[in-house]
Image 1 (spheres, rainbow, N blue to C red):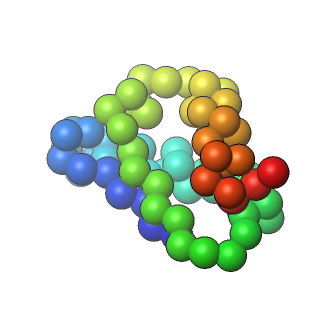
Image 2 (image 1 turned 30 degrees about the vertical axis):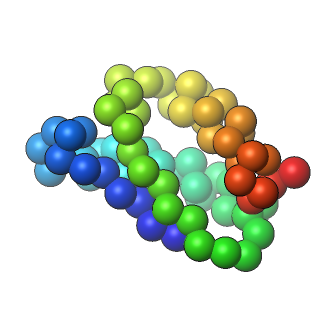
Amino acid sequence: MGFVASKKIGNAVKRNRAKRRLRGLFGEYCSGFGGGLYVFVAKRGVLEADFDEIRRALERVLPKIGARS
């Protein structure tokens, strides 16, 4: 798995914070992931969104990509 945040997110501190938030969520859901390669791309709103909002977005996307049923 990989976590990516472009310079559009902001400076290095903001990019690292965005990736830490994504890694934190991945830790909660990693047991439900099937085999394969996953790349999580942080978007601009990830820093302003509250953690539950990001969690709901991840829960919506996982079945679509076949990572979880």
